Image (cartoon, rainbow, N blue to C red; front, side):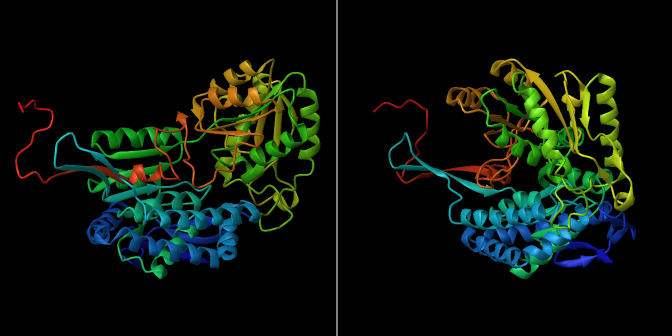
Length: 494
C-alpha cells in the first residue's frame, strides 16, 4: 500500500500528528494506501517555507518560471496512462475520463507556460507632458489552494499553474480521499526543477488543515473549489483579514431540449453530462428542461440509452459509469431519491443502491431518471452530486429559461435547438457562467474562464487568462522625466 506524506520545502514529511487516514478504492471498498493527516503546525511549516521561497521565485523572469511548467507538461504527458490509472483507483471515475482529466493538466501546463511570455499589462498616455504611465501584474505572495476529490489533478493544475507562473508560492490542501494525485504532481514539480518551497502539499481534513490554511496570516489568497456551505465560511474568514478569495462552489445545471431539437444528439449530451463521473461533477446535468411536445419521446429515448450504460470498476475499458466516492455519498444520493418520490416526482428508472454480486463491496448507485418534476421540488433545486437527473416539462423557451434561472446556482447550462433565434436568446438570457449550444453541460476548455454566477462562486474564474486575476495584483507605475514636479488633476496656469 502506498503511504502518502506531506511535501514541505522540498522534503517528504509525516505530519506531526503521527496520524494516518486510509485511502479507499471506491470500486472495491479496499484500502489501497494511507495518508498523513496534518495539523496546524504542519500548515505553519509549509507556509513558512512558501513565504521564504516566494521572494526568490518572484525575482526569476516570468519566461524562466514558465520553463518549469513546460517541463511539467511534458512529464504529465509522459506519465498520462500511469496517472490516469492511479486516479481511477483512488477516485473511481472510468479510465476514459481519468485520461481526459490528466490531459486537462497537460493542456493547462502548456497554456500557462505561454503566459510566462505575456502576463500583459497596459501602457496608456499620461495627461501630463514628459510622463509615462503603465500597469503591470505583480505576484500576491503565498497562495493557499483547497481542492475537492472529484477532479483531483485537473482542478489543482487550474489553480497552481497560473499562481506559479505569476511568481507566487503555493500551499495545497488536496481532498483527504484523493491524495495520490497530489503526491504525483509534487514529484513532477520536483523533477521539473521547481525550487524548494515554491510548491508544498499538506494533507488533511477541512476543519483542521483547511481552516489553518485559510486563517494563516501569511497566506494572501485562498482559491477554493467545493461546497457552497464551506465556501461561504471561507469567504467570511477571508473577509475579516482582507484576503483575496476565489470560490467555485457547484451547480444545479440544466439541459434545455426544445421542440425542434435533434433528439438523438440531445440524448447523447444528456447521457454524458448526467451520468459521466457518476454525476459527481459541479457541471453535471441534473435537470432536463423539456418542451412538453417532445417530452414523452425524449423519456423513451433516454430510457433506451440508459439501458446501455455499463456500471462497474472504472479500470474496465467497457464500463461507462463507475462508483461514487464513498458510503456517505451513496447514502446522500439515496436520501434525495426518496425525497423525490415523496415530493411526487415519477421515477422512471434506477433509484436504488447496487449491492448484489460485484457491487457488494464498492459504492455504486443505479443511474436514475425522474420525470414530471416541478421546478420547486428539492430534487430540482438542490445539488445531489450523483447519477440522478430530473425531467421538468415546459411550454416555451421563455418558460425554460425562467426555470433554468430559478435555482440558487449558476454554473453551466445548455440548449438543444436548430433555431438560431432561440440560440441567441438563450445565450443572452441564461444566467450561468457557461452556456453550451447543442452540447451537454460539461466539457470546458482550459483557455476559457471557468466559473459561474450566484451561489456558484464569488465572481472569480479558474482557467484562461482570467485565472491570473486571482493570483496577481495590479500595480500602476508613473515615470516623470520632465525634471519638475507635475501634479495630476491640479489646475495650473500656462
